[in-house]
Image (cartoon, one colour):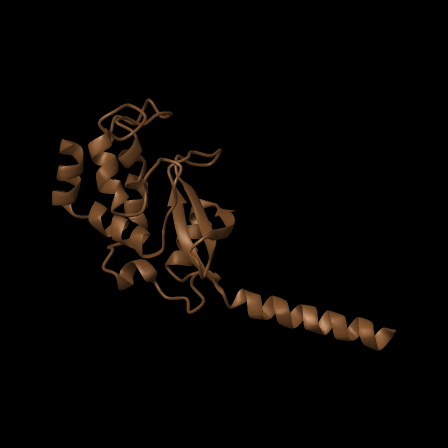
Length: 167
């Protein structure tokens, strides 16, 4: 009986390990505010069909440390600075993300800096079309993986920001 139980446990562990190989973990964001921030930061687990099968919400500071390789991460197992690898100057660009959704800071009235969105709480349809290029069709969609890095890189380009603001 003990041998059968051990054999079943061993087979179960092997199946789980094989199943895990069919997934990738990637950094992600979405524009749904949470109790900590205007942007929610994630690590998503995506299967080989492209479906999101799991998500882990992270504090912004932990997410930043992981994407730049300062903290171990299943989405960055080699500990590389993924932002620097694609030419993003630094994590400061993350402080601008709220501007894609809001025309003014929604909670901090002392912050007089203007957002880039055409409407008070959401981008215009034309701005959403620009965000679709990064995989976001609705405000609740995730932007993740390469699309996320492309968005952050675009946000550092004054011409892209000017085009976004003009829509």
